[in-house]
Length: 302
Image (cartoon, rainbow, N blue to C red; front, side, top):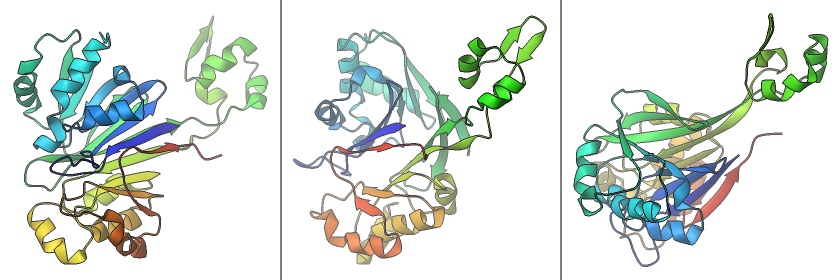
């Protein structure tokens, strides 16, 4: 399963009751953070999930409302006795941005490893989670991310017995290990059925809608996408700034066949995001207005 917390839902600047957009995903005692604006650390403390467990930070782009919270967060992680490396992913130029931000905390007790996303379809593993990044259209280079957790096939005891696999090897094989016993080799597929549906989350913000995003989000359990404005009459202004409105996010959710859509990254000028929620719901029914500390757990299908 994946625990998900939308730490904030605001764009451009934090408001007293609206933190900046960022997302925390937790699996197996480890966490992935997407974006880190100046209010992220406050939201992290309020959600109660340990900052020490964050191994990977994914940055969509280098506007201030998505990165300037990094120095404080990394300092707090160090003050919590973290010594393991932290991996940060983003567009080329990431190290230069971090070097500037981290002038205020040059002696962290752990290594910060920067990874430039340089391909149009870039994949990497963050623990057990496969991350895919694709470039999207904004005023500056920007990335959308999809996080996928695979699920092995169901254990088949009858097959294991038929192949005379010793009982002590059943559990390691279920965990994906290959067992060599003398002149015999046992493989996970010897005891597992076909792979089952896993879990998938897609995060898209500060961009225009595109078929690339629809392809990235295909069949996601949760699609977190920006809706800078709810009022469709503001679509031209959003487009000019490289953003999108509720209806555009909902159309991509529908076309991608996702299960649920959370809207986020609201303009500070939009004081009541739920006011226009019906517009998105007419396009994609299972749409929700994101809010500070909105939390869910994505679970495997039975």
